[in-house]
Image 1 (cartoon, rainbow, N blue to C red):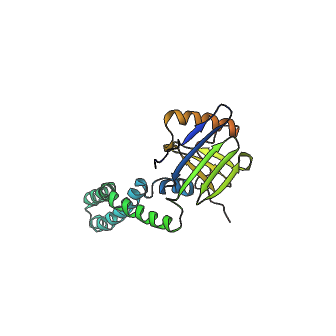
Image 2 (image 1 turned 120 degrees about the vertical axis):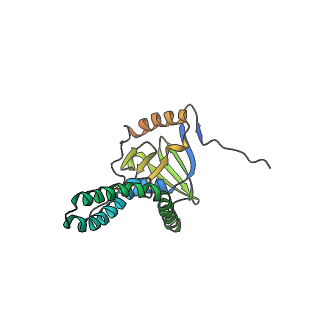
Image 3 (image 1 turned 90 degrees about the vertical axis):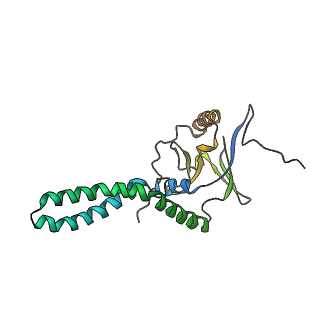
Amino acid sequence: MTKSTVPSIWRTSKHAAFTKQFEISIEDHLAVRYARSEPLPFGRFAGFLTLCTLFAGFIIAFGWWTSGDRLIAVLIVMGALAAGPALAWLLYGFFRAQFHGFWKGFLEAREAVNVPLEMTVDDKGVSILVRQQTWFCPWESLYSVEEDGERYYFWTSKTQAHVLPKRLFEPTEAEEFATALQTWWGQQPVSPPRLAGFKIQA
């Protein structure tokens, strides 16, 4: 039996629909929840290590400073300041892998990522098929539609969104989808996103 293939995007003269099959990745999840796609951002990692090395530098330099060798003390502090980014560059790959593994296990255990789904976007709204269950969100029910350079966000509330990664589109598809989305939603999606990482204060 020959396995048939179904194109991920189909359209007719009267009706257009964009259908994509994919899995939500760790990066997609982090983009919605924490407004970042990197489990361990290099800047934060380097900043943390720099604070640690600088603190150690101050401790070491204190004795030299109090003994009157202030030039040496200053050089020690400057060396400690430079050591932070250097250590971050050397160690980042290892710690990034550890953080990625942690998030992968954490999210997979909660079935928040790597779950096959199918999303269809058309003039009626957004439909999500997952585990043989379909969730349909008419355009008028959506709280907001946003986008950045990598994803579309279909927000059903201030904290819940369905993500459609742009990596799924070919260049021509991407242009057609952007045009259709603006027509269906009635305006340009908000960019950059304002709700990603949003937390409701108690």
